[in-house]
Amino acid sequence: MPKKKPSPAKPKAEKHAFDGFVNFYLTKTDKDAIGEHVFTAQGCLDFVNEMLEAGYAFKVAYDDYSDCPAVMMIGERTKVFNKGKIMSARHADLLKAFTILYYQHVHLSQSEDWDKEEAKPFDFDW
Image 1 (tube, helix red, strand yellow):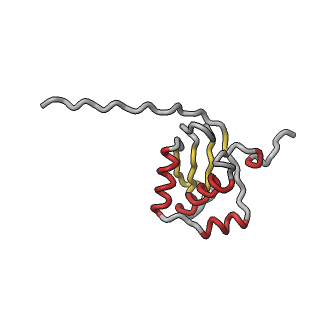
Image 2: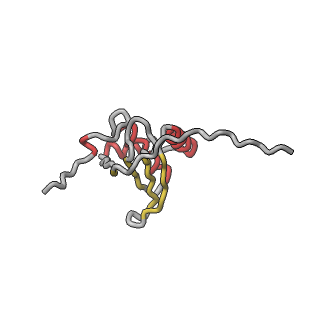
Image 3: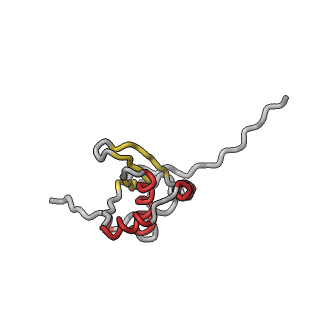
């Protein structure tokens, strides 16, 4: 029986080096909007799949400090925006944490570009 030839692998996009965390602060209005539109399991999977295809990576871990799950969206292999940046969200309800990521990515950033002045509100230059 002849051996099966492996299919040629697609070349991966270059993996970007870490470039920092992105800070978004949610107002009461933001939190209310998120609460009204919490992902279903299928909606969450659709969002994650779309972002994976766009070159993002995800990490889910338990945050001992906040005592809840934390989800991170990483611009690991993106082609246009957010190269090497990490955005995170925490919530006791995992689907709500993913909804917060979606809200930050689509509604709080401009054109899904996390690199904006308002995202860095603190000046550490004493």
